[in-house]
Amino acid sequence: MSDQTITRRDFVSTGAAAAAAMMAAPVRLIVPPGNPTKQETGKILNYNPDMEYRRCGKTGLMVSAVCMGGHWKRIAEILGKASGGGWLDIGLDSPDFQKNRAEVVSRCIERGINYIDACTGGEVLAYSKALKGRRDKMYLGYSWYEEEMRGLGSQWANAKKAGKPMEPGWITKKLKDSFDAGLKRAGLEYVDLWRITCHEGSSAHSDEEMDEMAAALEWAKKSGKARFTGISSHDQPHIKKMIAKYPAQLEVICTPFNARTRASMKDQHGLYATMKELDVGWFGIKPFASNSLFKGDSTPGNKFEKQDSETARLAIRRILGNQVITAPIPGLITIAQADNAVAAVKEPRELTPPEQARLDHAMDRAWANLPYHYRWLKDWDVV
Image: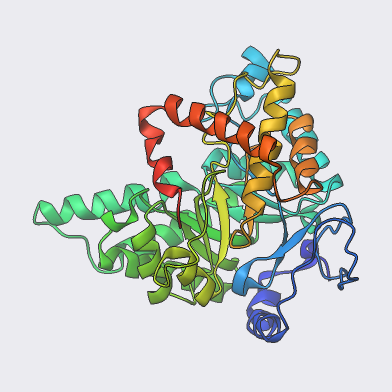
């Protein structure tokens, strides 16, 4: 049965049994391109022998080693005025924009990428449209962050400070209602992953808020509207606490993960150790430090295009050398960028000394040029 023909009723009746079977199966990682050990590939969505696939924690999904992040930053530089604005206020109905997204998604599918992570309402609408008629080729991650914990948590906290606390269950109801409304607007019956966007410093959310959020995620799974669930957060200590408290609801986490991030093998109480112990899937955002890694502006033919493409591949190779990560999820705005990301998967994980020196130089420059609001990326050198 393809994902395209699976209904919510199918998920409700079979999801628990499937998950149990996945977790009982031996954990065997598909090796890099070519699959020389002849692992079973029939169950890997959109399998391509030139792609590596990694097990996404307890979900059991085999996910491409590079996925497609929802952000399309710098797309205005590619499309010009036709885009209708910057990446957050893009003209979603622009024919040029829709053509660009459809073409890049098509190339990703051709190259074996099988997961798209949509983080904003606009991204959900754009990628749902781009995937119409081919949901059986891609897993879709969903977050309509404008309607999720960042805003709701602030309203909850402000009401409490004002001495007029919200009724118990208010956040859960708001999340359920907005999720239903988002699915309807996007023409979706279900999503593969609902990963709610929390405050970057998610410890700003009270235990009450997180309890209500977990209740909404549990409802989404039981109703079959989300196959798997999780959160996005930049707060390592809080993530550790939450995945231990809600192991059934927080199956996948989105966190920053860049070319300098390394897993601590000595800290038995660190985030890496906890994620591994609890078998949590891990998607890495900002693999290129919000484009601070690059010299050029991403336009085709710019004088730094070749150098920036090489730097992007070095960063992806370095990140994939960490077996802790399921996949980095770079925003891809051109077909060439999709091809370049896939090319990195086919290259050796270990960088040569000259390659490491070039990447170190690029990262030093990126850290020096980070915008103030992205300086927290430096906190992710060790996990």
